[in-house]
Length: 473
Image (cartoon, rainbow, N blue to C red; front, top):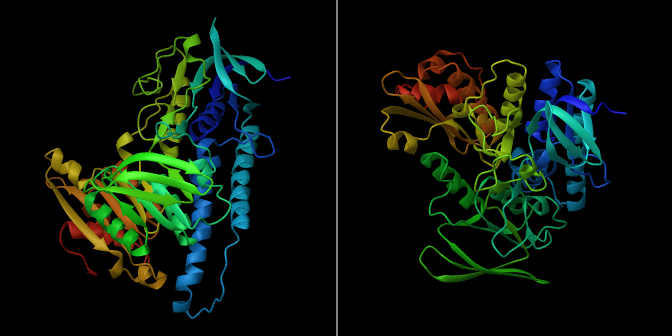
């Protein structure tokens, strides 16, 4: 029988939770992790939204759809003849499910390896007790000296339009569409919307994105966002900005969306499926926070300080359920930092150096401040850009869309932000994160030897462009 007394109990086994549990165990603590996510067979499926209905499955579908598009549209230019190329959606979804299961099983293995005791069921507070907290773990009752809440987030539904996951879909339903819809509607042009829109557009769906904001990807550097929009328009992804969504009706034949466009004209969109991607809300339902007086804010997020301490002594919270960006890697960093703080160490997360990625084609990635932010803050800066069109490796790949952009302090040359739209932006951004963590200047990157031919040379050239001395453009 499992030990019911633990040094640390982690509620939730998403990226924040499972990483916090493993790090705490590495630091010599007796750790339990509780998670209720179930696989299709009813077994445990740790990994949270990211592994089960987010980052991992969406990347699997993006990869499959990219192969299909290459076979249909780009093989010929390589001299490869591929006729009558078809997509078997069931096989594609099956592969995605297999990738998810590999990740679920990998986390269970890591728990075993690191001697973390795993409980499959819902975790919730019961009461405060001497020396800690009583926690319900499915049918079991545990006691933990310290508790880390990592319960993640849920998709936000439109008011009065619940997800039925048949016609009106969250990210979960969007990953389980059984056949390519003729017409697909998306409300919201955020990360999930654009990625899922890209998958089904590549497979033949006519995709329309309705976005309430007047600007496209407002959080992205404006120059980069415009470049991305140009690419999406060319691909046939129809994006309407500045719309006001009205009544939505779902029936046997699909979904109809009444909306007003940016000019104030009444419009109607008829689609087979509608994906609603308007953000996510912290998941504190069923946590029984009130039983111990755990403080939540007006959004339902757990209130924490800069170190992820909650209003209760010995209770911490990380990831989507607290303030800050809802990103898996941000949750992981917080999880590690909290485990180290519990152990008496000085865990640290620099929220200014959390990279963002949108895995469309072209990929979009950035870290640090945008040009518009620097202007608003009155920071004097220099900018340098380099197009992938002038990069030899990008030409050989046949993917020359986009650019790398550097923003550096006008006086000190310290890198303030790096923004990329183009091939493998998700990988290229790591160099910028490392450079900025060491407070490098654009000149430092410009002076470092980069392999030729490589996409990373575009990073070096953009750094050179800050001083107006690119060598290949």
